[in-house]
Image 1 (cartoon, rainbow, N blue to C red):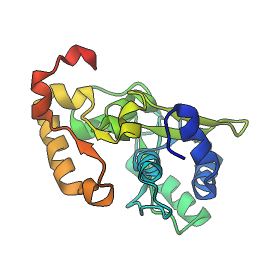
Image 2: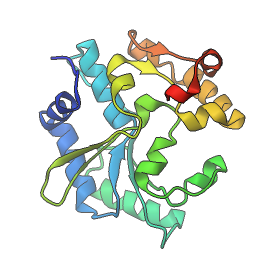
Image 3: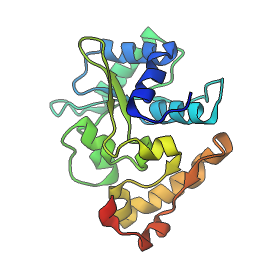
Image 4: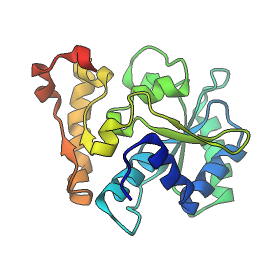
Length: 200
């Protein structure tokens, strides 16, 4: 069944024991403003939209959180170690969004979802988490249209910042996503120069 709505997306995740186990492991850390994000969500949607019966392997599973009181990288590594101990089969990556703005030399993020909104592509700016009652939540600061339509576009911050949109173009070229998901359509930053950016 294809994904057309947010509820379709959430149902597909609920019916995926592998994804739910990862979300449960991340939830067990009780990190503030915590989400499992990026390719973890995007790849699931694209696999479903392509009718794949086998999961496309992921290079890593991105867990993000927001804690401005401790922005040491070694703290992130300690959380990664806990997750590896819980499930060593998963390529865990943990990043505190309270420090990640430094990587792109932009103003500090105000939350994990704010950090997510500044990921390179709208289709990757997605996160999932379990709340304290075990309910599944979706964060999609740019909506889910692009991911379910399999359209790769830069997020607004990667359009307006020349330094960042070169990063976007290089990233798209290196990922070779269309080899994995042939129906994906890619928008280059240059194509957007003719569009009204107020529509974003």
